Length: 274
Image (tube, rainbow, N blue to C red; front, side):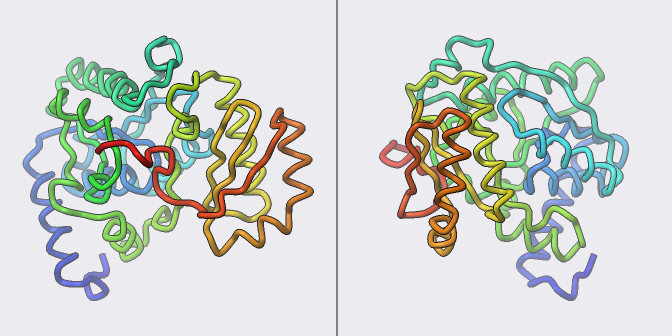
């Protein structure tokens, strides 16, 4: 750990996190392979070692690349990692895509993790929400509270920026990885979530990544796609207009639009009461 590179306030939060985690004899970490859960797993391993296990619940809503990253990071950081299956699309309530969709999904995933924890007499389940998540519409928080799952990063006041700075200082490979929430978050509330739609979104975003765009969202409106990239990348995206139209058309989008506001957190939540 390169403490000399850390702001004293940030170092204090890190130490508070370690102290909090040291209060658990054992834990399951809800581990998606994203920056937050990867950092939480790393921190938990520093304290609990093999009494901590990171579990990735595999669903059709996640990109295959994220699951592969989770396995890679676990190997590089040295902590135990397993995968367990779940299928939110089997739930008609979830597939109908209500505004509390994330609550329904999070509840299912946490039930899988708590069932494992209880079966193997593991004390608690931890998940990776951070302080910035309080500023967005997060119905999944209700499932966390109901299940007695803990959110250590949030509890010690770590923001996304804090987590990236710490991960970079510790030389962790995921520190600069772009955020990538589940693919269902690209579908407007009230529009049915189907496996076909999920796979089409994944294919569209993968194509944009192949063109060099690292921060991308393809919002799915049946046969229309609305693309969000960082505002400074809008001109570059338009420069690839013909390629994008051709590829998106080949996977079923009849109309492709560009959001001139660019990417911003939770654009499909705009207008919802938090």
